[in-house]
Image 1 (spheres, protein in one colour):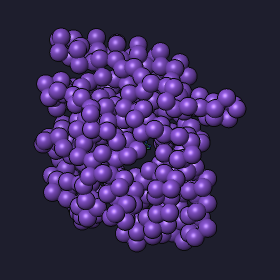
Image 2 (image 1 turned 180 degrees about the horizontal axis):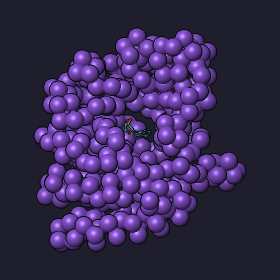
Image 3 (image 1 turned 180 degrees about the vertical axis):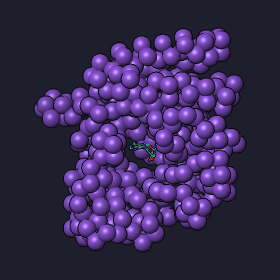
Length: 337
Ligand code: SAM
């Protein structure tokens, strides 16, 4: 198995299939003047499937499709079909904003998708409009229930919690999920990219999120899936469902991070907070053999020394403080969330 310099294996691959998004979420992509990746630079489904197969050879057993908004990529089910037949891949999932999910979920399921994450930060339509800056809450809810009717399981709802924005929606979301059979994943607001003007004041910590929920619906810790998942999971003591919290800021999990990311134009990124990427598309389009690509990816992973969130916490606790804007990072919309 392939390990980096901190002996972390390569196990997960997040593939961005497009940087296009029909939302402009304040915490992710609050800007309009962005240079979109040109169509001819996007990896084709054949190229993605070839690279995915090589990553699986190197030890990856889980792939998540993301973006941008992955469901804006036409015929995505064709890619799902190719990936779901990869030998050695145990888990294939998708993260979506849900806006066009209702019309596509049946095709995705038939192609081999078994589970899904849908991002939804509030059930209040005015607030939804303020956070998302585009789109329609009703469509997202329609998508969620269509996924449920189709039999996808589990269906997880990703909630980014931002102080003064939706920290008062936590219990509403918990009650909605408990009633409807969805699993919630609360995500601490992160300083991904440079355009969301993150400050630590906007952060609602894992502890605060858990205290809020536990006071109303007592929880019991379950642990991290496979010991290395980003989410720490909890179940409700009354047996009515589960939640998870991804505490990248207050409880970083760099030491168990086994994730690589592939951008829509074929660049390999080894940390969500990276400033650099390695161009694999050039290799593909210059006719590199599989063995050559495997060697190059292996060499990149063996040298991987990223531990951005650990360092952020060290800086936040050090008294010298942490200023997100001092660190140049690739935008979330480009590298895939
Ligand atoms: N468009 C899809 C969606 O909305 O789910 C997939 C891409 S999105 C970048 C992937 C995930 O990243 C979403 O769940 C989103 O909420 C999360 N995300 C984006 N910006 C974030 C931030 N600053 N902090 C924490 N999570 C963030």
